[in-house]
Length: 350
Image 1 (cartoon, rainbow, N blue to C red):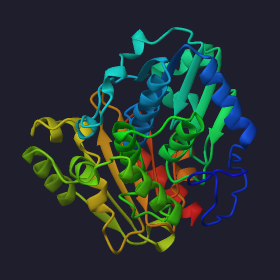
Image 2 (image 1 turned 180 degrees about the vertical axis):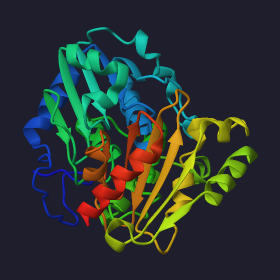
Image 3 (image 1 turned 135 degrees about the vertical axis):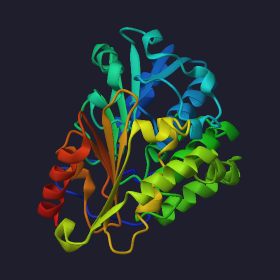
Image 4 (image 1 turned 120 degrees about the vertical axis):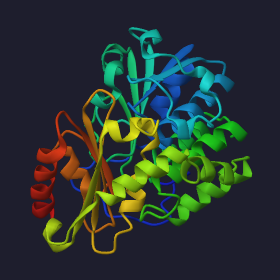
């Protein structure tokens, strides 16, 4: 059975992609449930610099495990710190610094991570875990873990986390619903991306019925920012460049944000997520790119498309990954060479 959007039913069939992981069957789901029920302690991990789907899914599952009486610890690799836009999510008392996670957990559940490297400093603990369950929806998933709840047709990891919670027999409460709704809204672009199906809206309806507050999610994720962010955004837009002939003639728009740009305005790196949403509005460009310098001098390259270009393979070729319309990768040096590589890969993709 293919569990895609929710509840084990395919509301809208989608073509299966060659090379993508096969969705989990009932045997895989049952194995995950048995492992959890037999465990007294469960460790949870998600990818570094977590987004709403990674953190929301992890916190929701952590809450459900606590309802079952499990001792739960959760973390993500350095830099350890919840992004400002996600600090409203409930249940963060289960979070601990990565160094405080069990060195060799008996059961570790990794969420929203397509590859062990995405776990950062927690990758070693995943390798030493007695049992490793992977919950993910990336088509680029490397196939790690002994139990794999991986479905590239799911709109978000939150879809799979909700299915696991249902199979564990835990009723959704308000905190679980809020976290899952944040994850679902994040990875569907506030229900704007092509991954938004009737089943996605059906799940959203169930989460609202369980107490999720969409106004709070929308405000925290998209509708607030410190004044300094506006000045950083203005500078990024002023530097934006449009290359009409790039991406096979579909167009590329890109900009950069240095560490100095944001420090001058007192803006943390975790506040920059929304810049690319402004850039991708450009009518003349299919692909939008924002190169953001991190606190340690590396560059994170965020990429978005409007559906005409598959960015997951492009970014995977540069050491990252993601989805068709939303992907990224980390680059060790100045972004000029990264942009050159991207242009070539985008041309080949189209």
